[in-house]
Image (tube, rainbow, N blue to C red):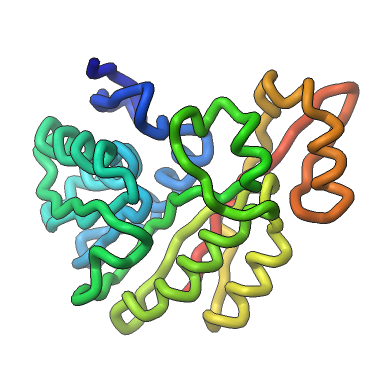
Length: 234
């Protein structure tokens, strides 16, 4: 059964049982990309596109006429991404596959990375990954660091990658890796979020992961919060 979700005041089709649905991190990532992107970015990849909310809303808001490239490991999500692109009259080349496997002969001016970036242990208790895989490792750095490493090979000259770091992953490890691979790294935006209610019964797990420096979060007056930071590397 098809459902509908709103993102950036636009309606998107999805399957709530099979697709990763947009979160606050999706919104802050899209907001940052909207400020950066223009028609000068001739080739843009929405990486880990899901149902296409980030890439499609950016192209729609900025009235970009070029083709949006998009990919996701989920074939079902890619099919919905194509449907949503058609719905919003966005030209798209969407493919399913693991990491950059679908783009062997391509290079991009901008890669917008929105693949899983939280601890795999956290994904198991979160409301975000129902029926969706998150093979990011215990500290949440594996997939993001792979994108940073492999992504460099898929950039045109002066190409850029924009990506989020959620504090429910090893932020320090990811930033150190990014600094080794790219000359310049810029913090574009940051925001704190309340933890989902599902997390409160797993305080022991959260504290254990924080003690090992795999994740970070804050607690004040009994309220748990985490953060999203969006970075640009080039």
